[in-house]
Length: 68
Image (cartoon, rainbow, N blue to C red; front, side):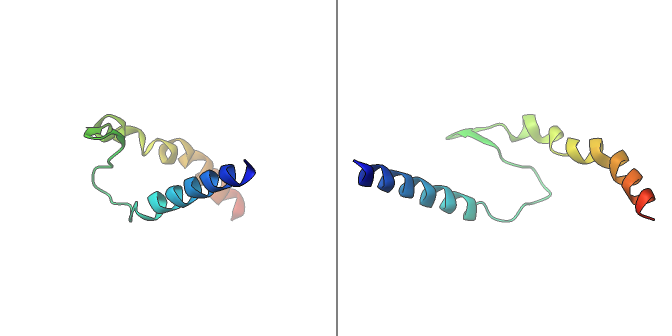
């Protein structure tokens, strides 16, 4: 029983690694976010991708000023 669970987990890790490596290099164009085969949510979520940079810009500026 333990061996079969270990095989399933190992297969899952290998599949996740293959998907991560197959993702490729990030592009500056449209970001595809697949919900399923043929269902792309990229155009809906694309405006939210820059949100962390915009929100953290004042913190970055403050830290830059404090660092000298």
